[in-house]
Image 1 (tube, helix red, strand yellow):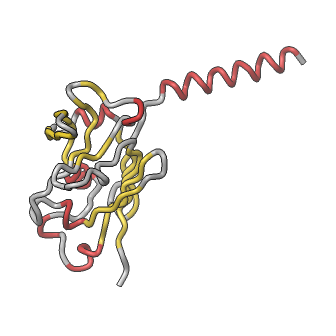
Image 2 (cartoon, helix red, strand yellow):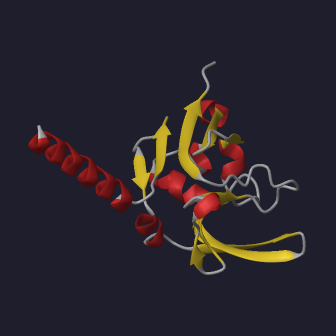
Length: 162
């Protein structure tokens, strides 16, 4: 009996250590050519960009990857491919706590609109953590900050049917 408990405890401890070592990731799923699971290491290898925001007189410099670059890696239509049925698509961004926001594919494409959205993994030179989560979307041209979703875990691309 004692041996079984020790073995079970050992398995539990190993599982907890593995969970602690697991890097936070962001899932890109849905109507994509290539589903993605991205970590901060993956984002660090992509072309980097920065956005400065001011909230209550406090400036924050976010660094990360333009969201349209991530969607391009997943094979989401952009540029001249973004027409007809493809324009009836959207991205549903979801946070760890269940909070969700929506973006049409047209508003995420810089060839359509000057509203680049950053998938941030650092703020003021330090990795995001804690209540911010490891990833967040920064939407600098939105007047309220409600779509600058923190604790981001999933981007689901949805194609509406006609």
